[in-house]
Length: 83
Image (cartoon, rainbow, N blue to C red; front, side, top):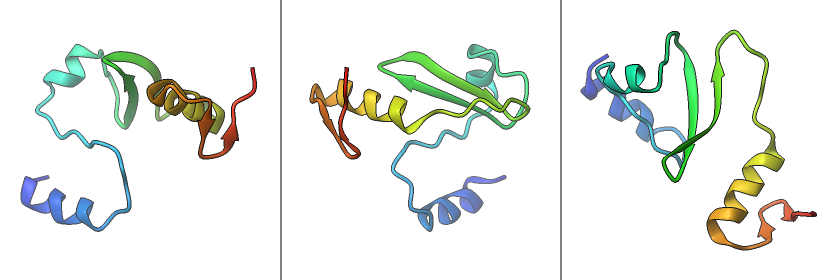
């Protein structure tokens, strides 16, 4: 796909995360051998990954924990995280 095709499409979506279109170097760096492949990075660390053929999903509790850690607050969108 060309940039001029992707940008209008993405601008119509309600997403609040970064999207990367790259030439393959990033995929080689993170050892992505198949697509689609999802990598979740936090402060430069790979904290979760999913290949299209796996059934492991990231839980909302894990996402809440990441948000709480980033904001240094025990309060998140879903309520207070319990220890």
